Length: 169
Image 1: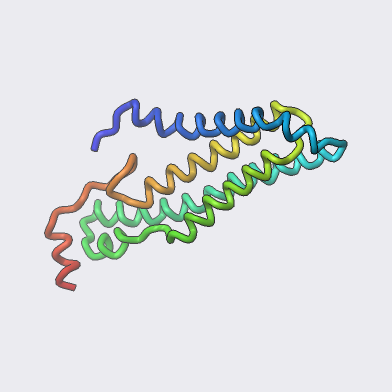
Image 2 (image 1 turned 180 degrees about the horizontal axis):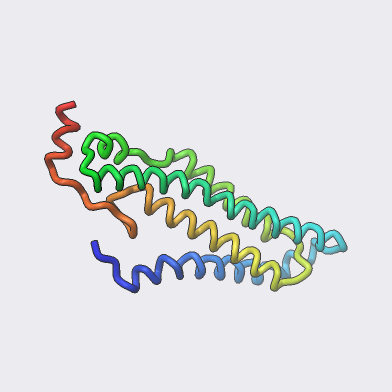
């Protein structure tokens, strides 16, 4: 399926918009947070939150590399007409518990960052928006590559005779 420029733009804009939305949510709840969290310790905790949040966002990319490796195996098998290797790899997916763990830890990191006292709203907005945007992009790419026949990056469905080999074996 041919992707339009609008589709390509949406792949980039969606995580950015989700990151901005998360940053705006923080700015909306910040006045309520300042009533019970204040003090000099804010400088240390906000800097630490920013560091660990960005570190977590970068580490999230490793799951994408695993999915990309699997996708490349399927694509390579398809391009080289290696039916057996294609059939061995086409059904491999990220386990559901890994997806739940990834999504859950992302939600906990962002929630913790939103509940942390930040001395400067702009730093908090940028950090939270960046972490959410990066994680959203990783999630979008991983889920798209996880199924090689649908999504933005896809591999054509092979002819029916390829599937007959699987039934016979």
